[in-house]
Length: 216
Ligand code: 5GP
Image (cartoon, rainbow, N blue to C red; front, side, top):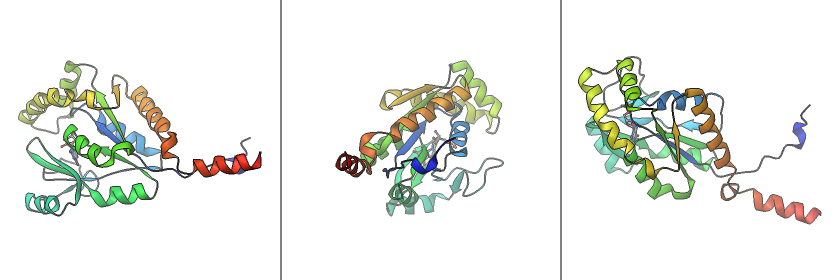
C-alpha cells in the first residue's frame, strides 16, 4: 500500500505546452485526451473570426467574435499571440494564460507555427513545443475528407496549407507521428511529465535540498 503521508510535492513554475500540426493530424483529439485526467493542465480557449462548425459551442471550442472585436483585442494587447490562418483571425487571450501560469498550472495551446513563434519570444524557457505529424500525405488527405465538416473547397485549401505548416517542424522541441493515437498520447504525456520535472521549473527544490542537507 502507498503511504501518501510521505509524498513530497514541490512547488513548480507552470509551463506552456504548444501543440501544432496541419489540420487533420489529430491534434484536437490528442488535446482532449491530455486534458481528461490531468488537473494540472488547462486548455486555453482562443478567439476566432471564423464561423462555428456544427456542434461547436461559443466559449468551449472558441470564442466566436467578429473582425471588429478581434481588431480591438489586438490593439489593446489582449492577445498573447495572434495570427491569420486560412483567412480568419485566431488569437490566444492573454489574461487566462497568465493567471494559470502564476497559479503554477500548465497551459495547453493548440496554435499554428506563427503563434508559436510569438509565444516563444514572450515566454521562452517556459514553453514546450510539440509538433504532430500525420503518418503520410494520403492519410492526412483522407482524414480531412472524412471529417467532412468543411466544404470541399476548404478541404483543398487546408491540404495546400498543410505543407506550409509542416515545413516549420524544425522550430519545435519534440516531433510525434500520429500513426496510432494511443501511442501518440502516451508520448505526449511522457514529454509533459519530463518537462515538469526540469530542475529550473521546480522552484521548491533549493529549499527542499537545503533543509535535507541541514538534517544530514
Ligand atoms: P480550426 O479552424 O481548424 O479550428 O483551426 C485552424 C488552425 O488555427 C489550427 O492549426 C489551429 O492550431 C490554429 N489556431 C487555433 N487557435 C489559434 C490561436 O489562438 N492562435 C494561432 N496562432 N493559431 C490558432
